[in-house]
Image (cartoon, rainbow, N blue to C red; front, side):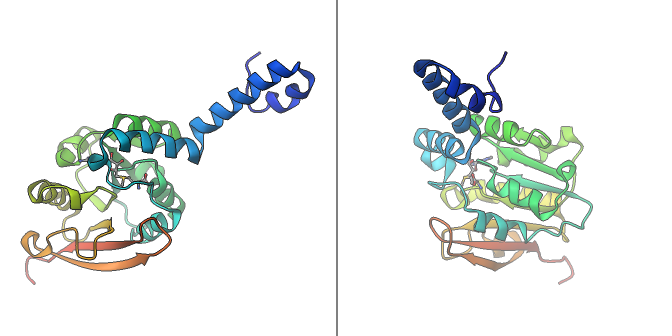
Length: 225
Ligand SMILES: C[S@@+](CC[C@H](N)C(=O)[O-])C[C@H]1O[C@@H](n2cnc3c(N)ncnc32)[C@H](O)[C@@H]1O
């Protein structure tokens, strides 16, 4: 018989102490692999290997994740693309806000975090790759347009060229009607709006996050404006 969460609490009081300890340890490990503590461990592991590639020291708080998700118009029929899914806090908020799983695509570069997202959200299409290749990454999935691109990428720590490349590709999918949503710990816009022909505004300030963050909402300036 396999050991699972249902059998352990029933069996453990009846077992000799050492077997019971083993089961408790087994449960703790399983819990760590699927819980927020486990997510945090995977996140920290990836951060310790390459802090500048991950960006934040901790996953986004649920308050920040919710503030990002409320920027998305879930009634629109196009895809919603999340960049830098990490441990999935924004992913969960997008699903909770009503984005249908069939219309949510998550892009994550880090292999461990990509695997964590696949485990945590088996119903979603999670793509492992670099957001600088966004259009090419989504092409095999038949995705050529999106109503929103929701990004947790550490844009501020990227070069101006790479940042421009990512935002340009996002707006290739978004057109004039779509929205690019990005959070930042910086006091100024993480996207060079004028150079890229965009308008941006601070949509929310979130104090209940470490560190506090601002959520920016960007759109393309219409050609005739
Ligand atoms: C600040 S963290 C994620 C925060 C996420 N909302 C969470 O709560 O876990 C940024 C994420 O972007 C990913 N990332 C960084 N650069 C990337 C790139 N060029 N393409 C795709 N993902 C990238 C990192 O691996 C990391 O998971």
